[in-house]
Amino acid sequence: MKLTFWGGAEEVTGVKYLLEVKTKTEKLVKILVDCGMLQGSREATDKNYEPFPFDAKEIDYLFVTHAHIDHVGLTPKLYRAGFRGEVLMTPPTKDLASLTLYDSQKLTEKEAWGKGLEPMFTEEDVRGLLGLIKTVKYGRKHKLTGDIYYKFNDAGHMLGSSIIEMWAEGKKIVFSGDLGNSPTPLLNPPTKIEQADYILIESAYGDRNHENREKRKEIFENLIEETYSQKGVLMIPSFAIERTQELLSELNELVENCRIPKVPIFIDSPLAVKATEIYRRYPEYFNKQAQKQIKDGDDFFRFPGLVYTEKSEESKSIENISAPKIIIAGSGMSVGGRIMYHEKMYLPDIKNTLLISNYQVKGTLGRRLLEGEKNIRIFDENVDVNAKIASIQGYSSHADQKALYEWVKNFTKPIKHIWTVQGEDGPANALAILIKDHLGIPTSVPKIGDVVEL
Image (tube, one colour):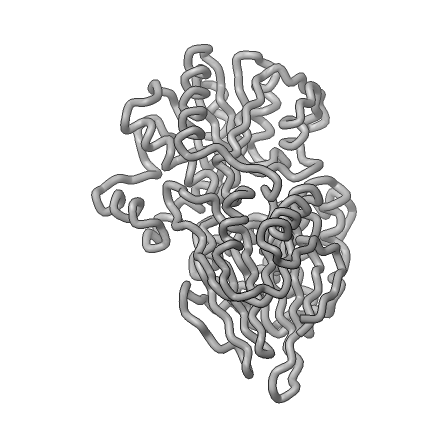
């Protein structure tokens, strides 16, 4: 069995792992786990246009851990390059991927023409890729082909996100996907797995720990109260899927318990509006507490003061609403989307606050704001940053160092090797050192293009 790291090595985004397996009949089976876009700097995103470093026509199976663009975004490009194998993912991931891929296709096509390039993929490619999908539910071991077996488990990162176990050639390899930051208002904690020979574990926050849930809620509540008293605007760049829904459930609780003043809250993202409707379809994927609240009639996604603005005219009308107000808009790293219009308008005012609650990839506007830049460019205009820049990492959908370590610690069978992936160099190395020093398991940080024999 051979594993090649074609993405997600010393980088958070662009995840692609190629597993080559020989069955008992000596048939070679090629399995790709995730096929995501690189995000962040212009140099990184330009790499998305480069040809795949493998032959797409030779890929037999594509496993998708979840519907975020950095894991699923290049799957239509894979189809365009000749892939016609089977795609495996959970039912919610299929629905969310359909939403994100069609949205991404429009954006990347516009971007490509602006650069004088051919689009990476077309609407027809998205449709073709979606037609290859087979959905799989959590918790059941399935035969893939020959003596290769697999199982999808709940990763707790977003609706339908998965940890993938794979058995082949008498060995077992586990792909963590992105592990969730438990506890969350909606989702279950990541599934604990006891046995593996090899593990690929994400490491986005491999060098730090988040605030606990009560602390993050207290900080959030205080920021809202501060914004209200200053008659300011609280802007929250947010990923349309998972982050927005979790923030809504948290705001729902604060509103229902009268813990914050009455203030208009705008969800200014067409994608988030559609994603929220998909969340409504799958209450069985929520944790027991959330399921009970739904049965008791509590609607996390509808409460007094909440306004969804799907059309561009509705988005523009937010400007006419007097402060104080809260605006949650995409994108989560301020690299496009409606949040940039609001940032351009409100960042110069000292009364306003920008709350960063997502991971910010190096090179993104969100990362630069988080690191304290005081003058930025939005839509080719200089914008002074006088607003307060706040951060609550406790709202991240990624597990922190402690949670990642505890997840690994749960394995009982001696592990031959662990690779810390899907993290920048610092966090990936910090987690690798922690695991080696405290658990005695051989652990390393792979580089792009590294090939290992299992």
